[in-house]
Image (cartoon, rainbow, N blue to C red; front, top):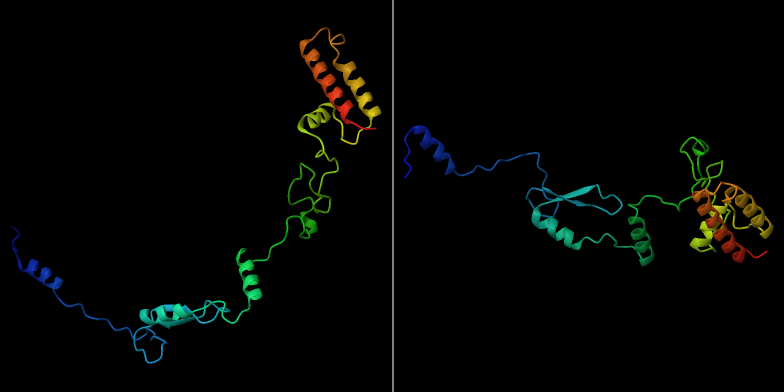
Length: 199
């Protein structure tokens, strides 16, 4: 059991039982609800056009005000949809990638274009000139292996094949196994493209 042993203990414990005194702050604004005299400690927006201009209410009246608040009041459905669409980007302007006019200083100095996606003036090139989309993966590999573009003619294909055969033929490379494997791959790529290219 705990016993109080000094006057200081009594004084300290007696403060616990004292009634809290209400503090009055003359600068506290009053509730803006008609005929209400409570302190206005809670903010509520005045209009949708200026959401940072507040009205001040007590807790009871801010709840009532918020229940009746309708942000879209007075707007028709088209205006509401337009406003909701702008909210997707936090009311900021947007544009499609590659359509915004580039400043001339961005043309070469803003970044390094290793893949050649942009023209000299900084505008987007769009689709690449060499359209490989009509070919499957194996055909694209064959074009890359022979270092050819998709618009190659049969004569150009044969010329390129002859150059690579002379370079990688096993007889020319003294029976080198790597050259022989390379020769087989080149021959397979040539056969595949020979059947693909329509002259």
